[in-house]
Image (cartoon, rainbow, N blue to C red; front, side, top):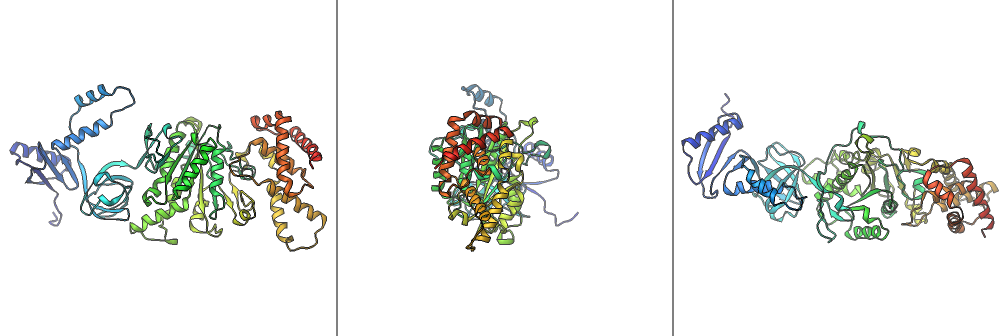
Length: 579
């Protein structure tokens, strides 16, 4: 036998030394529990009245009055409180309760600072497990080494000091979920921050769960209409899809997401907006906008603001996704916005560097791709056998000077099912939303469109691409032939048609009628500045005099040749009257 092997020693603390009978029981317990002969040493202590405390490595058995009382308290916490009268349940629980010899693993804090604690003595702690520090401070295991673990702290770390104790909980990080969160603003731990009181949760879900398997999914073929003309017509989003919104700072990325949430009014779709590293004033503005347009009743805002610690910014999108999964598992459709994952990656980079992980490209850790892939893969449309619910994800990424080839943008582009690229030059030209038709794409495509929208869109993307190309080549030309001038005017009319005021989503019949009319060259000869008035008057005329056409498009989603020609004829007559 190797003499260098260290034997496990058990330390017993009690007021009175155990007698022979008690010593035999201790020896039997230790041998059965740890499978070897363990030397037990006794130390006199008055700190554990009515019992004793047994320490074996990192395992602690507290059989004092206080330890047994904590066991009873933990048991009572689990008593369901959904019934009006819980007294009989409490009485039954107390009468049937028997204390058990349960081991508590307690470690010691070695270092703490910048929201990171290094802990020793918790040999069996698992990745993602919640640890309990002094004064109720909670943390999550993020780094496991040979003789210590690294933990991120969710609360203020002032009460956590070197040498203080830390205890395992055996639970993974989770968040309360339920219908009660609709209309509320909560932090990354599910705690309300809107001053409207507590939320009655219906359950508790882990913030990280495996993505649905292939067999549990079904194809994305049901439209999730954003109400934004340029997106619904050319880059449609389906329920269960992951569509990236990408662009420079202040190009309208959040505006597109908020418009999409507003457009879900009355469409039985729950919306979750996750604000990561945003200013608190920005989050309040989003809340007020949703409330003003009647969208807050079916929405939840999860915020980890710029002033919050990096650990809360890190878990915020996972917490929001857990809330979304609660509704998806009940067969409901959910739209979730992550605003934005650039700041999420920066928060994770800060945590990783503080945990002494090796930096890689742009100082991000090597697993930053996995950080976002395991989040976005949870967006899916479930099969009908397991409810048919869906999560549609709209992650937002900020670029620098339009560089989509940077590390984080390329990572997320490869994970998602397409991207809406917003261009700064278009934005400053007044083209809003500033969607770049050439770089934007939806990999689901026409599968996520109604037949009416698919037929009405026709050659729109090709016509716009030709216009943009011709515009570049003719911007220095002084003399243009009539055909080129007509094509430029036609393209300018299409670009003006795609302009849309913020918080004014368009219905399906508005988009279909406008597309059919425009692609039939009905706007030929109308000055660009008058295009908005022409389209507005045309739609008002259809909604008042031809309501049957609008209703048919909205309810059936169909557009046959006869109806299409009817729209063209009516639009042509209106064009003749338009001055």
